[in-house]
Length: 384
Image 1 (tube, rainbow, N blue to C red):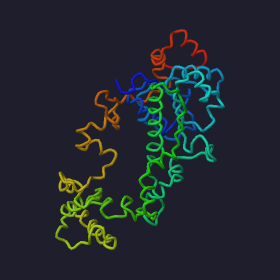
Image 2 (image 1 turned 60 degrees about the vertical axis):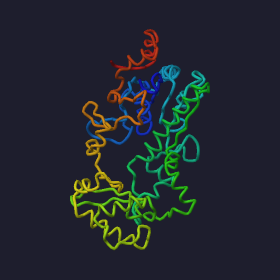
Image 3 (image 1 turned 90 degrees about the vertical axis):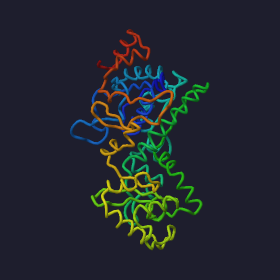
Image 4 (image 1 turned 135 degrees about the horizontal axis):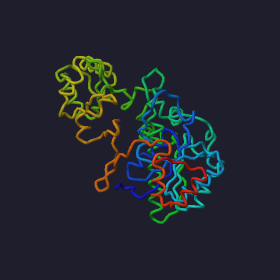
């Protein structure tokens, strides 16, 4: 039984951060029921060929509703009335136009936590504009600091906006709002905007900037690859090792393990000497394979680790020892996190097909045979 066991989450079909937030809640024990469209829409994400494994869709059940049909709105409102949480990722105003906005939902269910995931937020001059992760991270200021000097900023996959600054922020907001309800507070809307979440992830940089310790020219700071001891280096076999030896005691171990302890090197914090240090580090790492360097640095505090690919990471001894990855239906994926000592999280079943296990979910949510028949008459679909 997870820490959120007994919490009912109604999720409207979406892509990216909203499903990721729902996955986090499901991993923690929440009962997540997703409202899918009857058929996969052409405009829901990029076109792809072949079957896509939907890891963030794990751990929930599904019913189908065509929200363009007026009768379906009443069915959705009935589901909202029995939910603790709603998660939606539509553009601002979409659910209001359908008659499913938070005012109506909260009028029926005053304890409801209504979680809304957007890029720009529910208000502001850009609220109605389309966008994607990269746009939100760009406007937050964070993208400007990622990449090599003199080159275009590098997209940080879609992890800073969609997932770290989006879905994870929404999940935190939902849990906080649930805690408030449990203490006797009322339900409310959680407005999670990726542009603001990305900015929050950069909080430490704003502090460094304000104190004069951050230069907005990329590759000239401690954490942006500007220093030779905080970067990645190519190895003899074409792989990479990451180096994060910031503190002097760790830096000393780095120099020793690289075989440079007796070399005439510039001081660690002599900026004029950084090009020389980088040149020596580059040459040293190119002299051995990644596995050889792993053996050399094993057991040290030099703050050096191999750069693993997605497919390699699950096999690393540390990740295996902690069971940091799990295999579900033949698909390797991250295990739930964080960890709870008394109420451990569990990665649920693979993402359901449209309407899969919907009848069982409705029964678990307290709908009797007559109520389910009424929902079916309103357009609710499922297949078990």
